[in-house]
Amino acid sequence: MPEPRFDTVIHAPNRLQICALLTPLDEAEFQVLRDELGVSDSVLSKHIKQLVEAGYVRLRKSTYEGRPRTWAKLTRDGRRAFSAHVEELRRLAALADELPAASDS
Amino acid sequence: MHSSQDRPTPTEARDSLASVDASRRAGLRLAAPTRRFGAAIALLAGGLVATPALEALTFAPSKGIVTLFLIIGMALVINARKERTGTAPKEFPDGRWRTVLMVVGASAVFLLLFAAGVALRDAGGLAWGPLLTGAIGALLVFALSESERRDYLARSAAE
Image 1 (cartoon, one colour):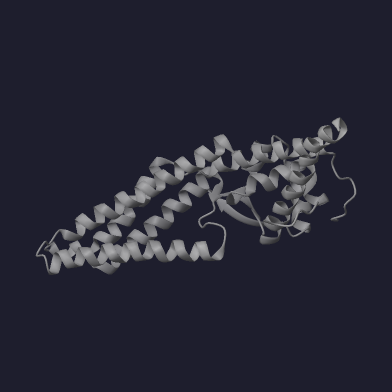
Image 2 (spheres, each protein chain N blue to C red):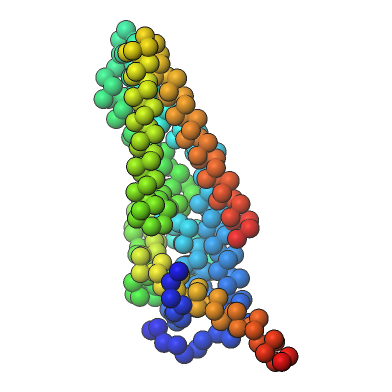
């Protein structure tokens, strides 16, 4: 289990969703990510760019039936950072369960 | 970039975890192999095991060429699925040793089936013996694919 580590690059809601969506996949096409997140192309591009700059996502270009396609893949660093971030969220969420108990005593 | 500032409150963390779970479930749903995909890969894998049966034919094509076509067929089926769905599921489990175990295990089972087919043909006198082991191989692959599909769908519904 990874050491809990809060990551501000991953924590933004859209980027958190992108990482979570990519976790069980080897790679996903840009349009699939856009449709699943329900955001515009430009919004998705902006978030993907930030993940790429952090070294968490790698992009690959291809063509299919004459149309250009972009594929996104979580890097090993990206998977590690995402797992550590989720652990940190779990740790923080667990505090929510402890707080009422602490205030009762 | 990785500062500890702007940390969410426990309640916000819980909401973020809920969003992570929902997105992960969506990813699992996208990654689930279809029954048709499993059947196509199973037929091609079974065909690979059954290639020694070609010798029973009067005008048998080269086993090497048939094997090459079957391997290219598998690559095409996998690529077609990827291009059609816009997703590629993780082919191997997490962890180097688990991946090695899976590859070695699958290769051993297929080599065993291949050898059994050849033994049935040569020692058992059953010219079509490899077809039988090929069918067993195909059923095995289809069963594995079905189990993987069910696992993906169950996890996407329950996680």
